[in-house]
Image (cartoon, rainbow, N blue to C red; front, side, top):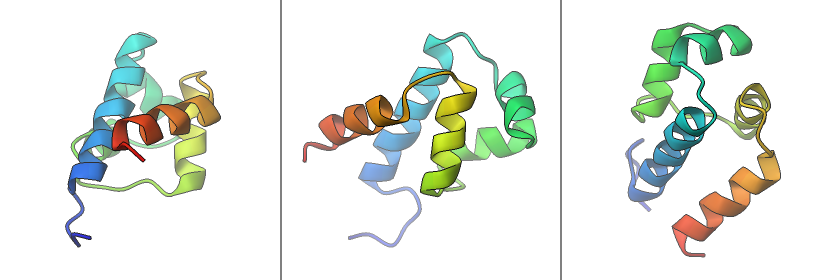
Amino acid sequence: MAKTVFSSDASKLVTLLREQRLHVGVTQESLAESLDMSQSMVSKVERGERRLDVIELRHWCRALDISFVGFVRELDKRLGR
């Protein structure tokens, strides 16, 4: 497995994160406010420059009012595993 932060799997994750945010109509700024982080940090996550741990991912999903389990299922489907 590649040691780079931006592996193919990570690329699929950040693509899904961005798609879900846009789908629910939330800006990076409002997501950042909900998560108590800066907009630039949200941008770094969406560009693959910063990874989220599983707890942060759960908070991210809650801030978007989407199912964490549903998100993980969709990610798993996209990863092909």
